[in-house]
Image (cartoon, rainbow, N blue to C red; front, top):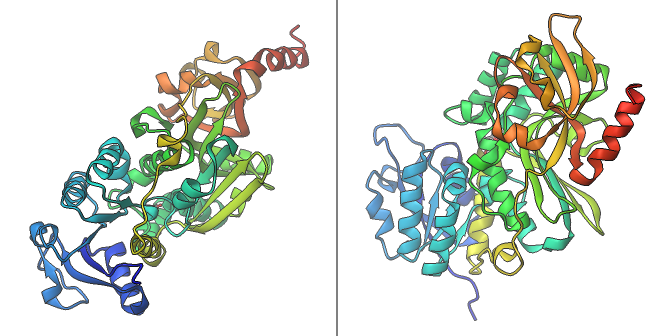
Length: 418
Ligand code: HSE
């Protein structure tokens, strides 16, 4: 009996990922998947594929009854949502790599799949070649997943590696990331953390059943990190990484954010260099597990699309177990974080907002402190992102509400204040 179906693909986008997929499919005839048509925006651009494969009319693909899968790897959010939602409504399964679109329209994508009994897969949208979404979805039970932290943006990790290890300046490191096809067409999305928080939104859904708009998650990128921060990091034997983190707290809710962080040398994330991504999962019994692989680039991203296509041959769908079959978890801002903050002038730092400050250096031109803040302060105010101020979380940054009084007393005792 035939248990898997032939896939006839309508492909939207023939950029870094689309062309990568086209080439990979030519090398994997065993998959029984063929691209019937490719929809592109600009018909005049020279492409390394037969001209009759291309069209600029989206309806040629979306209304073709023979096409049973739409692969959407374009850049623009609204057109991507239009394509994906129409395809799902038309009974076609979808594979998408548009993390921004998926994160922005998550409730709609969930509802469309349910209503039209179609499947939308998007492994390529987070950590590219690392099979993290299906893994979180299938393997980890909600109650066991203690925490997850990850490097989810290849470009910023590439830039930090080139700047701090190979002494390239920021501009040239970014240029290189662009040339290699890692960066978004608007690199601000990478640099300022938007891309990472979009990916984190997707992983939070599959890890904990959380459906949250990326705007509601505290995040930053690497735009404020200074060379002087790297000097301090080195003195303390830390690396600086842009880390996405989520941790289940004692109150049963989840602390989640994407922020630059000091990472200790024995942390798995230290090994993640250049455009690689890494995910460290901590569960109650398995302890720590580390996933590692290329997080950007043509073939690594196309390989995840290919894996989704392969899964569709067996009618695979995300069950969204944590959302539909467990009690979905909620995000909380009710905890504290320990952070290093460097700044040009004390007037930019609201000292009264800190629970305590345990280290400060004010003698040099660039000043810095290490202190503990209620997380809600980062959510509600933006002083820590403005006026050239740079906030980098400490290695174990989360302090739970129940611990804070005890720790505060201890730190004041150490400082000789009580
Ligand atoms: N701009 C993204 C990154 C591409 O650098 O991670 C992969 O999603």
